[in-house]
Length: 139
Image (tube, rainbow, N blue to C red; front, top):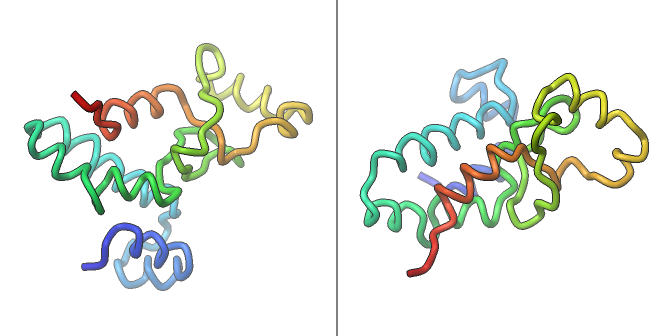
């Protein structure tokens, strides 16, 4: 099977063909990669030993993939719901803005739209999960 970056490129270039082949029509790219993130990173890494985590997050694996492909779901809504590249994250959504109603209200303001590109923002909880699960601290 192709590595995750090749799979990501395939989904970006041929989404309709990809979902027909897998028989998952009605699914968005965001929903698909959110499922991959939840199943491969969050659930499976919770159950693994440190050795397995290093293997899964090492070269050409989930850590490599998320460092090289904008495939991390940012957990936001509307036009701000995107797959992001962790190295491009500038802003995290915290506190009252985690409520969808407040978020949608604030992020319709022109001044905010002009200063906050959707590819540079992530829900604070999602950012914490990424940093806890994928970013391995060197000991």
